[in-house]
Every structure is written in C-alpha cells, then in structure tokens.
Image (cartoon, rainbow, N blue to C red; front, side):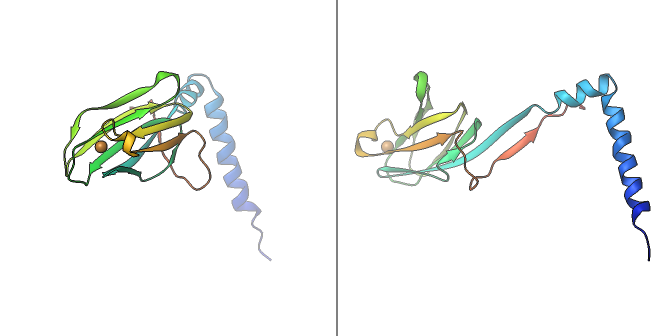
Length: 147
Ligand SMILES: [Cu+2]
C-alpha cells in the first residue's frame, strides 16, 4: 500500500511558507491593498418604438456601462434616474441605427431607465442594483498594485 502523506505534506509546507511571507510587514500591506475591487457590468439596451429592453434587469453595485442601440426608425434619448436625485443620460439624440454609450456608477437601489421623449408612451424600464440573485453574473476586476 502506497502512502499519499508525502505529497500532501509538501503542499501544506508551501502554503505555510507563503502565509508566513505575506504576514511579514510591507508585503501584507500590498496584499491588503490589492483586494480593492471594482465591478463593471455591461448592459445592452435596445430602443424600439416605444420600449427599452435591457439585456439584464439587475446589476451589482458598481460601474454599469450601457450600450444603447436604437433599432427603431425614430430618434430616442437614453437616461437613468434613481434615488436621491440621481440622474444621468446621454446628452444627445440616439438616431435610428446608432449605438451610444453611457457609463454610470450605481449604488444599491431601483433605477428607471427611460427615453425622455417617449417615457409617457411607456418607453421606460426598471433596473435593480445591489439585489443580485444567483442567476446573474458579473465581471470582477482586481486592481493590482504590482504594476
Ligand atoms: Cu424614445
């Protein structure tokens, strides 16, 4: 019967060494700093007459990049409204066939994504931020201080 203790023992020793190194002074500070994370979520928004369809209805807290495509034959606008007076939008018309981008940093809350011109015709939808369930995915970027 062969024993596997030899291999396991080596692996444990390596882990212990690494832990000791990190615990020592400056290295620990760097390791702590590099755990700061920013989450960026890209959401596709398709504008038609008179509807906005989002590729996802929820997003984690952080940066959200809206890729707004107007697939109708009418010019539209694109804006995001939220709690505490949050209001951002693409400042120009999105003409038929055009794609424009809006990058926003969103806190936890419920936001209304809308077309300023046609909101009264129902051209608006809801985006929930910070209430993500297991069905959503996010891209997490770890910022390293190593260069
Ligand atoms: Cu519109």
